[in-house]
Image 1 (cartoon, rainbow, N blue to C red):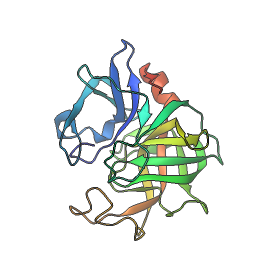
Image 2 (spheres, rainbow, N blue to C red):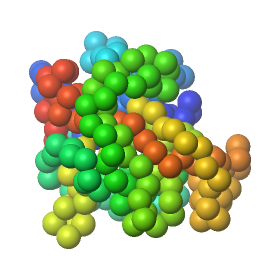
Image 3 (cartoon, helix red, strand yellow):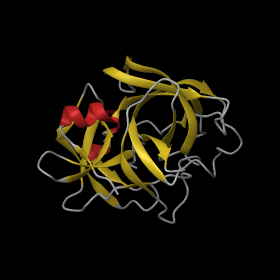
Length: 222
């Protein structure tokens, strides 16, 4: 969602009640200004007072605007405003299936949780002591957990027959590079005409409860 390739995440309120969007701290480029990719519309700016290195998190201040309890859940290039309600957050357990949601490559579901509460060096090299790992499974439609530029995006679980989303975390790093399937190409990956897309089969993400607890944020639900 910003020119450096970062992705905005879940709608939250800080401890004073101000509306924000969560984002990965390592995506905090371009002087902290966040814009939409194609429309280049201003979204907000990074609030350095609402950030934490250990959870790789920063809040995007919306300058008086409200973040509503919805999450985009679809292809990267879809522009019709489609979104699903965020109905709360859940804890991650090995064997659960989740979806990754990146601004560059869109949503990838049926990613299976393989590990919880493990430490990892994030995309900027900083250590996150509590992360969860999810990797593609036999049920993953495209055998991809994410695309370059998707780091910082939200992780969620589909609930209520996949009509709503349950927040699970924020992507801090990917691993295991793989060739992208034909469905992820220059025309379907958001910056595909700027650089050749490459894909990953596993993602590390900071569990959302850890972020909310550390920064004393509240998740905005729909």
